[in-house]
Image (cartoon, helix red, strand yellow):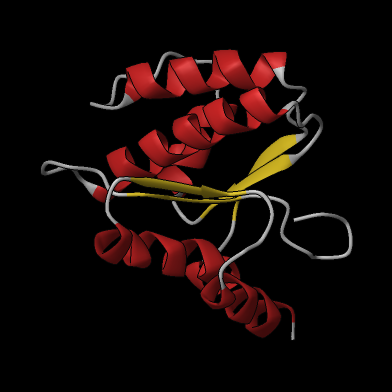
Amino acid sequence: RDASGQPILALSILARGQFKAATVEAMAILRTLEVVSGRGLRGFSVESDSATVVNGLISSAWDRSPFGHILVAAKELASSLDVVSFSHVRRQGNSVAHSLARKAVELGGVSVWDENFPEFICVLVQRDCG
């Protein structure tokens, strides 16, 4: 979102296979950073409702978790994008992202919007800001 709370990019990814929630969250953050990189966006923050993933992203230590290699790739990419911060938010504070994740099952594959957002995203953002 921009400073006024309006969406600037939305991404929905269906992860195929059987993954633990933290692994999927790490994969989604990496994919989001890849998309953001291609759009030329700079200086933003990344929020996640996974404290485990956020702690891995802000730590300078090597993460030995099964998704540690994903975090390394995300940190390397983030450093080239001038990411302001990684922060943990409760699921209630991350309702748009949580809803997009659930919608991925219906949408399938990867869906990216950076303008002309579908109605369901606009409703989610309005509800989250209101």
